[in-house]
Length: 290
Image (tube, rainbow, N blue to C red; front, side, top):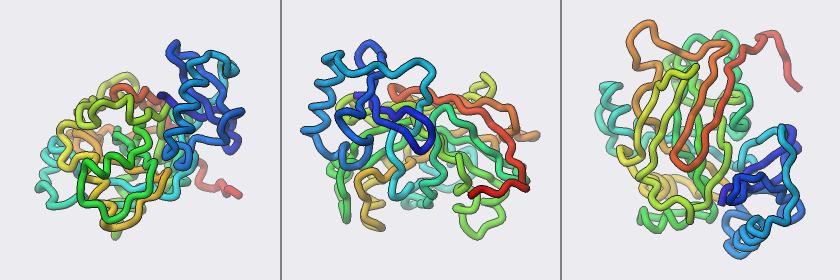
């Protein structure tokens, strides 16, 4: 099942795509697409039946598509988790996953803008498989058991400002900006993802393909990542885990490195999880948001 949210920012309502790719409004059946829903197989089956019936209202054309899940309690990222990405970086294969956190305020929808932070010089793209928890997971050591806690999969772009990362002392400085985690367009429930380690990932900037990889080249599998993370922290329903990016990021390309600039259009896609399309915009450094 493909689950989405639609509507203006802050006012999104749940929706789903039926077998004919018709977008159906779910707001009469559930309040939102969140961890509570993803962990409830009975409610999910009910929604699936409602969508298949064709009786739910059609979402009008032109309605904004928002992030497919409600704002997570936490976003956990993993770095250097693809063999080809580690190879291009000249980095040793990590003994264990490299973990960082991103704020939930970095999340935007699949067609919203990526905002360059004031003074940006090295803003980069990273197509990733995103994993959303459907069940609580703590102190799990079995990757297969950890996979059973997954509520859904989605396409994500883990945007990074490399200059801030390089300045240290933490990666979070370059990962935490608003709009730095576009997700969607939809969330796919695990029953429609036969093998999360057999998915292609691609990313284009202005139509030029910059990244092309496969989750089969992950150093730690999706289940292995979840199990490891659960030994560090409790993962709650609705939490989002970003599982790493394949090779081809701007920071590791030949000079002049093609970092994101105002006006660029970034498209990111994971097999079966949909393609997002985000425009890069500049932000006035004098702007104060309240």
